[in-house]
Amino acid sequence: MRLFIAINFTTETRSRLLALRDELRARSEFGNFSAPENLHLTLAFLGECDAKQTAAAKAAMDTISFEPFPLSIECVGRFRRDGSDIWWAGVYKDRALLNLQQSLTDKLISEGFVLEKRKYSPHITLGRKVVADASPWKIEPFGEMVGKIDLMKSERIQGRLTYTPIYEKREN
Image (cartoon, rainbow, N blue to C red; front, side, top):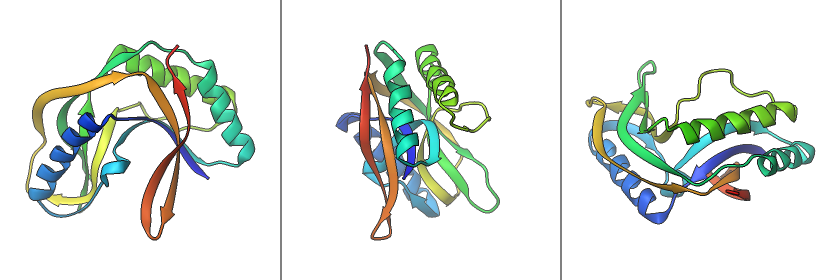
């Protein structure tokens, strides 16, 4: 299974993210835009995992502790790519979020996972391969309280990318 650990959103936050995605789509000539149910904030990408690795990921999640914290979405930006870009909603780098992500990463590495080495840049992907005549923009911040994280399975079902939560860890 292809797995990652993420923060999923309430209906209200997801609705606000969809409005941003739709605004981006309206400004774009082309793009592969995120499905509503796939909007999330990745904390750690694990890749292909067998049953033993899946159990290790659950164990890592179970050993970390965190208090509920506010997550704030503050802008729309992009990662430039040749010909088309990845557009995202930017998340404020709150100390509690960064500590959670670092604790999780440290525990996963101790469980034997090989993770990306680049600096964590919290964002919610709105679209890939986007060709747009737009510049990144600021928004009125919005968000929610985070009280759980999910182990997610990523798969293609009838040609459609589908993310399914298979395990959750709630705050202590």
